[in-house]
Image (cartoon, rainbow, N blue to C red; front, side, top):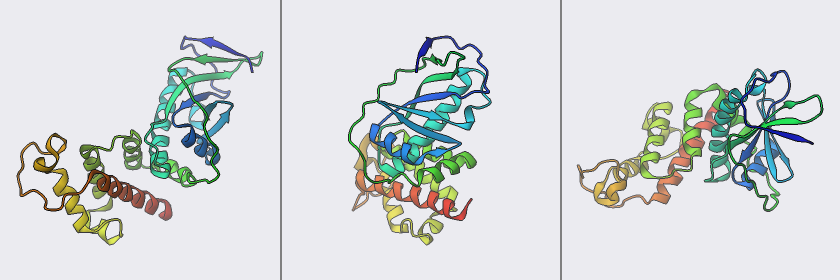
Length: 244
């Protein structure tokens, strides 16, 4: 395919297909390409590149509009990939390929540098749930927000506590979390006690002053990360199963 390079943001008819190049962990992108074949998000692996197509781009008439839509989809894809595959590398939207020109070429609108290197071949499909989770994100702002934040790769105590609060609010309280079997009240209290403990975490704690007795059995950061992942997974899977 012959491509022509353009740095402008000129208007191009939106009736044809826009495409956006994706960057991120190649293994994660490859897994997503195996399952993301829906109108809302289709990912192709083409040589050493990964390309996103979406019906969200259909009505766009300028590359800037495509960029905004692609950035949002990339955030959601990052969150679902982090949840399904455990990747810490965010997926980002890069160069935009304009609709095909009469001569068969495409204009490329450079908004970022894309460098994707292929490694390994996966033989399993752990990303099968991603389609449903991405669909949830498009319908429910709360899900979109949680997946966006989880997809950034940040796993510090402050971020984990924010995510814990969001799941607690969405579920209707710790009692509902425990009733659903996502985590026990004791484990949630242990997480909270540790996250708020300046004596245990120092500057990483949510509070700058120790207001209570430090936890006798503080939770490790690894345990906290696993707990929050279970909460997120339990929540989105319940929504998916209920068809919400």
